[in-house]
Image 1: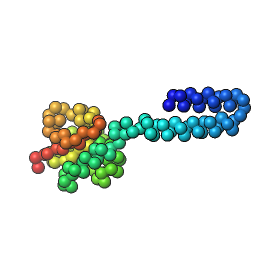
Image 2: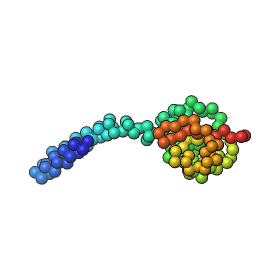
Image 3: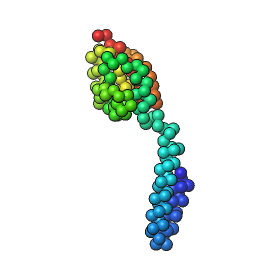
Amino acid sequence: MAIVMTSMIVLVLSFLLKRDTAKAFWVQSIGMVIVSVLIVTIVLPPVAGSLSSRDIATKFTAYDDHQAPVYVIKFLHPGFTFYSGVYGSEIKSTGDLKKVIRENTPAFFIVQQSDYFGLNEKERQSLVILERSGKKMLLKYPGTR
């Protein structure tokens, strides 16, 4: 990728110095297309799992009993809803997560590891880790009601 970028910059600058703006424009355009193709085919596939909610949403559908409410941390909510087809309630912060746990009703949670580790030890022990996908977690709170 660095070779493509460097070649593009050198060629564009050389054409601009020769006052050939049409060739500079086309070299820049073609270079940008090549860089875009390289990013989509080489860079994105290895990191797609950590960026997408698809894996955790797919895993959730195996556990969903359609009775317990689903709570999704704000950052993951749009992707989770798209891939699972379940809207769920949005949790805006770790404080909101703690409030829902205190309600003591069975529920599913889709959170990031940082949200999970923001809970105290007692709260973490009350949750069952069903699945992990990258830094995303599917949790279940069994509740007592």
